[in-house]
Length: 229
Image 1 (cartoon, one colour):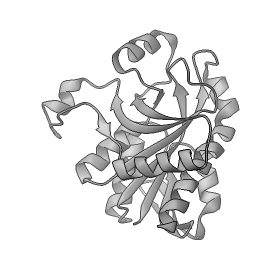
Image 2: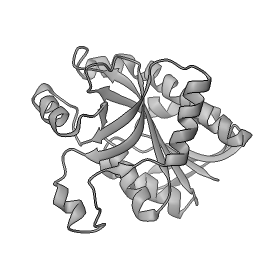
Image 3: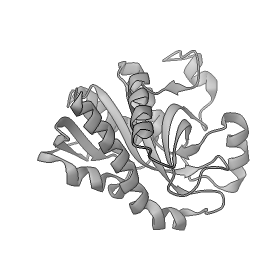
Image 4: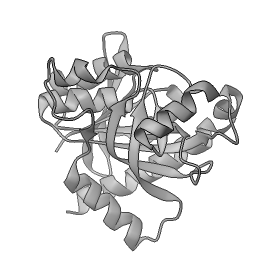
């Protein structure tokens, strides 16, 4: 197994890049790719830049150039469900775009049966076992929704009514989309920086570093378990 790790921003990626052992750095498409080992697992980690296209570019390069056969998306997200609080962590069971017309996916390539991209079931089960066995609090499994915008109040109700997501971000569904057409597994682990109660880009900026470390810690536990097996 060789795992590609995609974070949107440099703060989100920083804990992963610091953890890469025997690291070598290469560049492609204006991105820097950090290759090495985390918990004895071969990884290639990077920050892709914010947004769906940037994340999709990174994912396809990880697959084509670096031969990654699994993609993990990690970092931060905005809380959507009322019970989700700051610094809770969401592990994606399925993801979808909130700002793409449904028939774009179902009536045209890749002709999906659903607008949702399913996360990898074995990885999800491993994560559920880890969370349960280690009794890690404030971790939830559920829907992540992706769109090319920081969510303001006028979109929150619309998204909640249609998708009932736990959180929203700008990259997960696009990474899942790339993994789907390449037929490789993906998982997304995101920690909450802002909510309806604690809203705004300023709140995100304030909480990003701490939330990124929490997300990294949970992904590292997954890598430890994969390595152990």
